[in-house]
Length: 233
Image (tube, rainbow, N blue to C red; front, side):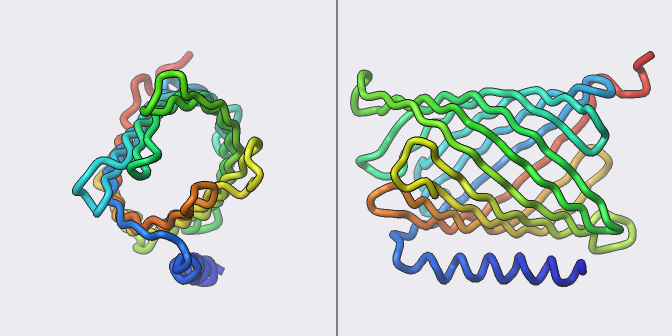
């Protein structure tokens, strides 16, 4: 079963690359930091920063900041609420700032060395275009992500991970807005720190022209607790 899941994500990434040929293609480099800091047993602070550069790392494409809070009704379920800030320049004619409010629920399942994670997120987006302070737009969308993490060695330090994520817009004539398919190799440095290096094919369907981005990503995860669960009464 685990091998089948792994091969499925390899095939999915390869298929997305082939499917992207009719699109305008670009290559991005992404540096990402994600931190989940426990505030006791039931709560955690979430911190996410992504810096994407066009032509791998030559010029600005997007700066993303997503802070928020998580509540854990169960050890394998978390409910999140947060805000987002984006500074995006897709091309010379489409540059904007985005302010966001998001809510999501994340459910985790574990089968041996394989972990499967489902995430369902709503986003309320306010866009202000850089060509005019009065050129604004409100949009909303739903995102669904299916992710896997597969431990590769008995010590648990080396792992493979990937996900498929679909963006569905509520305000566009083309409701299928974007699609992501991620595949990466990760290494746990210790209990609270890990690093991933991966490839993310990224389709954007609602722009004209439609884009496909080859994104090469380095991610650092820092999950040190602010208040450990055992300190609660």
